[in-house]
Length: 96
Image (cartoon, rainbow, N blue to C red; front, side, top):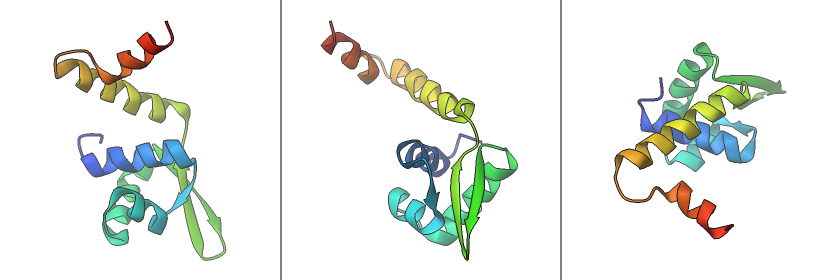
């Protein structure tokens, strides 16, 4: 489910904003609303995102903190795989 970069970007955008409409997500990830809607349908089936309807608008949010943690851990692992000092370790050193 997280092998697609657009889905990862959607999850990251939802981490920052907590709740967004399809159009706002499309702007955030640089894709068309139709494409984002297709990705959201898959994320919803996987229970990674959930929805809230307000009139005609549907808002999406991460279903739980586990989805958010899963993406963060995947990004951290990818940074370790690239070699060198991962970006997330630089923040640890700044606080020392």
